[in-house]
Image 1 (tube, rainbow, N blue to C red):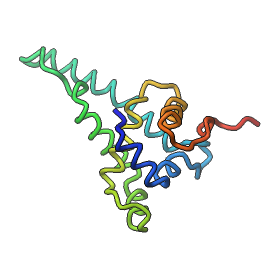
Image 2 (tube, rainbow, N blue to C red):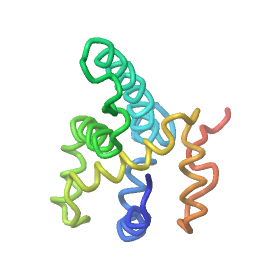
Image 3 (cartoon, helix red, strand yellow):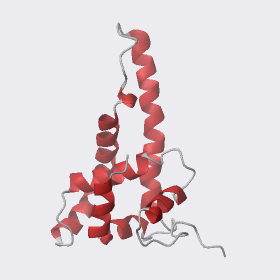
Length: 146
């Protein structure tokens, strides 16, 4: 689900990557990235359960469900991210650091985490971006021992 345009956007605006991996809390490295990944992780099973229930009570049991519609899933996760951090993302835009819209940025973050919703942590996301040529430490999202 991650597109070449997403990689290009992150390379154009390194603040976007730095912002989701920056730690401003006691949650450790990649707290926002992990939050967004867990949103996708928790949202997808909810959609699947909803689809199953609606098929049981509906007249069209073979119709594709919401969980099978990648555009719906992406927009929904992006909307949740926007509701969570849209004001802060908007602040980066207003500060003139970024010219993309809040919706575009939240969509970018949604695509990143949906592709890795089943992962245990964020290491797979970091690896994907390293392979795409981004300059990221391999252990960027691992908590320091001690």
